[in-house]
Image (cartoon, rainbow, N blue to C red; front, side, top):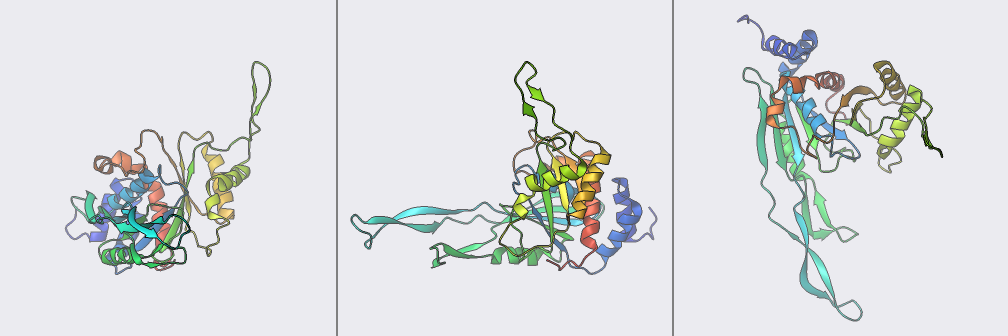
Length: 323
């Protein structure tokens, strides 16, 4: 490698060896070298148990292309309900034992390096910590302790100067994060791809009638209703989405032209398509990120490069501070 080659060019050459286009990687590497505010990305999904590999693969693809990526994961809830032996004298008849909140010892934050480039800035780190603090002495109108998310705010603030992308990974993924996130991307999980209408059971030896094929537009409408229904009808304020990524838990029964038609209809509906990922659900541990040896495997990372590249292009195309 030439000695006078810029750091951005070196990062772009490493990214090109992973399958990414050199010109796109160079443009992004130059942007990384300039002062910037990191993207704080929040994925949205109705059920997140089978989507950790997809998120980990995207993050690893970014890291392998020379970016510094932090997976900021919410620790499991350590608060527990206990019975304290205090009776409520105001209740009629026998006194009722009141329940009180007793905080257990909170877990200490943990930080681990999942992958680091041996000759460049690429880095993938996971940091797990509590995201909120509960105040047992302060209750809301439902008698539940008030909470604040100052630990999450502090964790993001501490990471801003060290990372290019911060991926928020809460315990529950279905609710948007307007306080902290600068971008929201939907992950749609497909168990059965809707390429035909309902099959009808009929009497007789053959017993089932083949369903009528659906058009790509009809399939897109079914996917929105079946997999993205949690986004609609919410009483919360509207949120601007940056795109949608689909994960199919099994082989897709349609070809690339059909999927392109689905993508066009999604785009028409305001859901920018960012790609399709295939995943066999059973071999993957539930709610676990890929193992470090997988994150180091170029063949594993390469399958997520196209989606990661399109997503990063979308993130870089708008102000990082937008929510």
